[in-house]
Image (tube, rainbow, N blue to C red; front, side):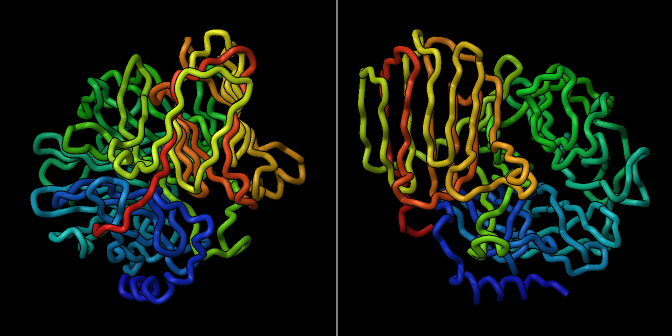
Length: 486
């Protein structure tokens, strides 16, 4: 049987075997092994806590544990002991995703315990934020109080929130999200309705809810068809993290209607996002940096580096005109070093060389620019300003991440998405060893991807405009993780 102690002992004895060639430095990674969804993203005891789906024993996926780390600034993380292991009958096949709720001096985790083909919701709690005890009467939501129209095999990833004296739990299910309510505590629950008035796709994973800039926002990673207005450049993956701007935040009058919905990402690698509120009451979002179906270069089937996957940069959210904007948390700026600035120049081609970790900011006048091609270590990114289109093609860049099926069919590794443009283009580009995140026009569009270069000479970014372009300002920084104490 898996235990927390066995997992912690294995990590300590084997973490020095990890190959760091492609391991990011300022994006969160585990010390060793496989990670996927962020879990229990919260503040407790004056620190940010990030839990995550974890299998320490291999770079390939295995029975899910909950890894755990804490941070003061959301960039530099301290690894803590494993929080949950699949060591009980009700979660013997895995402690799957969920969320956290801080109530006074107690931190509660609510997660999906998997056993015998069933997915049921369980509780664990801690008074020190490190050592967690599982509730003796788990599961608290499951087959005994299953919502109508829900399969017990597709019933997972609880999101818990507190409203007044009541608690609400949103759970992902087949084609929808369902809501449970507890009037007194987090242990006794009853089904109160479906969250939204529409069912789409085949499965809603990792639901999240928050309120920002006067908007009530629901997020889910929707698997399957999830758009009403067909557009070949939207929702192109099978699994798409989607945000819904709701007409109401009244969980006692379900289902709710939504005013609009959209994609959270324009890149390749972004899934299962979770949010936390910072001390300034702004919401911060983080996600697993992966897309289903890709070849995992660092795992045991390929390079066998003893680790797989990372999280995105934490991003601050704002809402404007029905659109969610995302920008990296301010604290990343304290890790800047070696500033370089260029101002007011025109060029048919210009380039930037960088070390393995950098930030590049560009403000450009595109009044007379038709297109801009950016050659990245991860691929070619093209902005078509006339069509309002962004095309990212990472075929034939570094190690091939396409599936065997895609390679056999000679399909290109390409993503297209819509974006609005005016007279000025604002870009903010982060490169971290094997990850790139690009924030466009103040975070209206974010493009995230991983890459695995075969040659250090690929640490170059080239810009080739079609038409006249004026670079008002270009700034470049190294991002350096200091060696000071946590």
